[in-house]
Length: 300
Image (cartoon, rainbow, N blue to C red; front, side, top):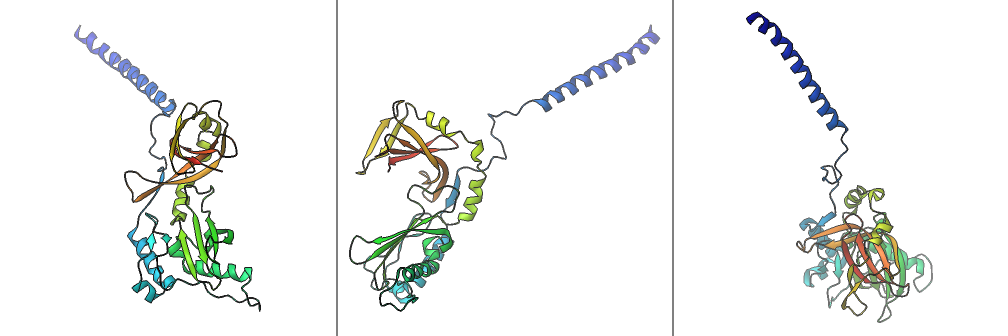
């Protein structure tokens, strides 16, 4: 009996090992072929939204450039310029500035009055000098128009910043220069976005092909209340119905200051959706990644 027992035990052990190995191999194969869990957050997903934070160095550089633009004496004795939050670009020239900045004189023709070409070259040279103050250089701007200013004999040149594949919204990316015939700069403001190369690369990680389609985004607005600002500045709330005409205009970059952190701007990729007729539609901005409503206003 003892000898028979010793002969059978190795056989049982052998078959037990074979069976266990087969089970482990099968489990490993199942794990290897199981489809990924799409609901689980992935560690390699790009950070979103893309953020821009306030910078002491950027602010110091802007104030240093203000001395160059306004002149050392005027900057030293006059009030400090008003800067935009976070971006630290110029919000407005100081009030009652005794000696306003000047655009450089450019002579191309022999005419007494400055030609349009000379004016544009003066503007270009001024922008090149004031680039840190404006938060954008000449190569990052496109001239939209030069028109008569509301008061006096001045004109206003309006530029638009286009650093991304999609247009900027929410009032960002605009530079305005108001100047007199003798080239004094009497108005200057910028809502440009600085550090655009880093932000552009970060936004490029969000692939449009992986986003919900425009049709799906529009469908998500059905029966949704939308709060918007009307032309008088008052807030209104309206529920979107199936009877409303909805049209996705385009993808845009929508900068938005964080509610919980005023020193941070979030850059969202958003659908600009027109609600209502073409005369005075409500423009609703929905995050193209999350579907969150970012803002709404009466558009054109």
